[in-house]
Length: 489
Image 1 (cartoon, helix red, strand yellow):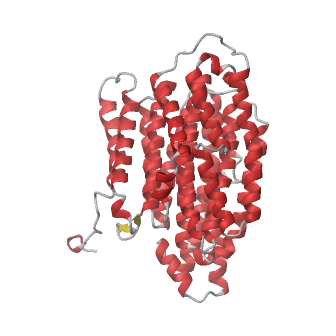
Image 2 (cartoon, one colour):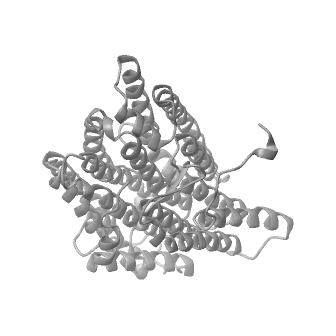
Image 3 (cartoon, rainbow, N blue to C red):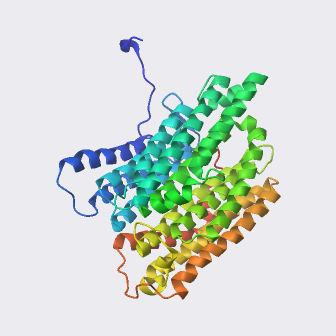
């Protein structure tokens, strides 16, 4: 190719500005931070929060332009309202985790830069319209997560968590990449829109049909690992427990949002004509994930392990929305994607706020349940806020968690999946016990350290802000639901 005649794809720089803001934050931290004396406490985390907040604000300002999907970089990226919701959730979670890391003592230069690197990879994943671009984003986020998990060099369990995450994550990435190869071999493209067109227009034959099915299965395995679906969830409790608590909050919020958003876009945009093949598998895994996650969470003795299994159960709830959205022959299938978007936005706030309370009670390391005992006496503001967040995770009315769970169950019932809706509600009942167990310890048990614990400003701000947002959305859900109504892929 003659460089003089090469014409690159046109780029709408305003629409990619959120990604550029995150990259700019990384450059400032690594270039300026490494060439200057150590900054005052909180500055590294402040730069990360500023970059993430700027990215989220820029993404939100593109809402009106994204009424119809906008393709970028020769169609390899797509900006639509679903992507904007996911990017805003990623940015908000990163801001909260950065503030939380400052209070937990992990907000150093490397940790803050890794938070932004993970956000960059996640942002690329949720706007990717090509499987290769999606894989690049996946690996960028995953590599940052592996290092975050092992970043506490004073605790051997942190290094163990990073190693486990790295090994199992490598296998998952290999499965995903083989899936990309099989789908490309059967359709001749890695672009999601082109894949959908060719699968819907070409007459399937035995050889290409087998490749598509194998590719779909391998892609789903890769996603299932990132989202922590049963039985691909085995890494989750060990990694969540061993990693520093701010890193755990990043995995539980950004990791979950990105994995589910990319899963929905891939399967609903590229493989809708094959939904009859993959929907039964998703149905079974959704039911199993809700039940197994809730049951195993009940028997845990560490708060972070308990919340890890709780996140597994939440992943099953989110998958209920995917099953509903895949039933395109049903008139109410359009309820599925908005329900998933609402759940992702709500859950990302709930889990970060809850883990911030855990970090205050137990520190950035392990968090035995006894560390939360008596929190209502030693730190009543944190305890009250944590109570609101736990009630929301249980799906109690007048909280954002109820709005999220009601949305996916409503979508399942509207599309005829009554059995799956019943399983989801039973799982919610079981999971309510574990949240009640944490609240009992906070309010009804004697504190291990009776002296009041000073609450860092950043921790108090994160926990109270998350609880306040939970109550506002729970009491007045209309603005959020109206904004997400009609969201599609």
